[in-house]
Length: 293
Length: 316
Image (cartoon, rainbow over all chains, first blue to last red; front, side, top):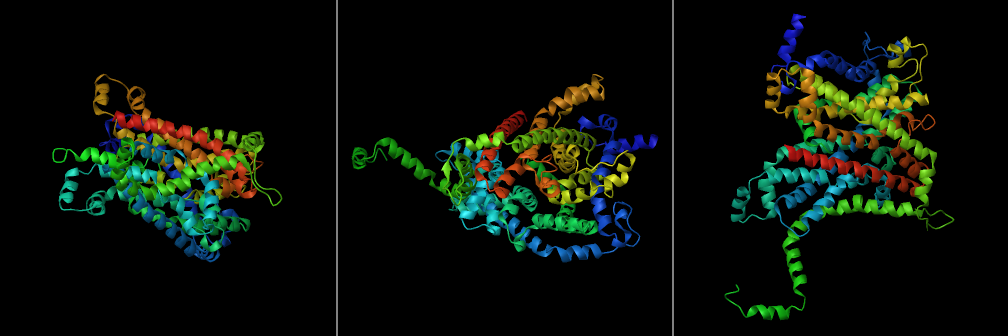
């Protein structure tokens, strides 16, 4: 008991006053530890099931104790059934394409809102705000019609296009640019630097943290997109990871190949999880900055 | 300029036949041109995929789609009436309401508890935060694949460890009474870690002097929670409620992978209904009418979130 008290004291030494020492332990730090373990169970099962040989039988599938004879057969099977390298490539193309165009549109618009005076500024600003209210995922039906009319049905460009402009990113960059002292720009103006030179040499280098926060949120959310690519893409070789995984799961579910499903899921989510574990702090602060995705 | 050439003014005024208001306006536009050019790329895409999309939804909702036998024809509010009279739609709305309340309240309560317990940054709490945040990062489709097995009758993880204790093994995803709850569990698991971040940020901002004063006054931890922390975090609570509410209407990937809205429409949510109408029944009119109805509700919700945001910024 005394040991626990000591442990709590250590754990909450530097906590903000709001939670230091008394409230949290009474609300049950132990409960949260327990819940965090529960939260990990699906991941734990995924890893254990991936390494379990099929010879253990269907009844052993739910055991969380790892098999004594781990095997890579499930990973090999999953790799053979699903076209994962292709899915990865498609998802990477989609996320990179969206991000690259976004970085341009968002920087230009953010600069205009942060530093230029122009007629109708408030009106256009509200027009951008409106985009945040018109939840994009609900507009899938009219946007599919438009993408089809543009001849982009069943293309990766069609998947990317609705996200090329980002009101959220524009506001994020506007805020970052506004924080940069005007004196820096004045100096560049005296040197005769044009708008693009000033954006490139002053605003962009000084706003890198905001750019990286935006990049993390943009890539994570489009990496996970499912419904929109599901509607736009028809050819199997253009499927992104999410659509590929859902087809893979449906196929393997019929054959009760749960080890293979676990392996496929592991293949799909491993890259993002590893990236997160390496850049944990950056990820978390980016998500906090981005209250509205 | 006016000192150097005073006579030039009236001449210029006569030379330009346009009224002064127009001239001033065109001068303003000319001065604004660089800004417009910078905004143009964004505005083109916003116009096509947001504002234009809303316009097309309205038009599509008013028309009946052309068939091989008949051209498309104006039907007024018939589509809206048809959607409102469709038991599948009203069922989806009710399901979505239950789903919203049943996911928003527990996931926020858990997120707040997590934040209170993990507000200090050290190796242990960082690891726990990461564990709780991991589900946020993975695609809903991947989460669904994992939970498909967890909910699998007889052999699944849930039945293997807990189901055996029950008198009858429930068919988690096959029973209409339970399937919606099962879908909610995934959502709570997926989102609680995300909302935790906002509460963590909020807790850091609780003013120290108020806390210190409460210590001096001899207030207990529950009193501090009730009279200082909760009132301080009110804007955070509102803000997270709105985000969670939006998520409840826009996240449906798990419905696609796990239940396809079944059994007997028990897990059909509004966005899945829209998808079904458009892609499975080719009824763009009905899909658009349903979209329009949901957009109205969501715009109200989001407007609320901006007011909350504005208040939060104004307060700090």
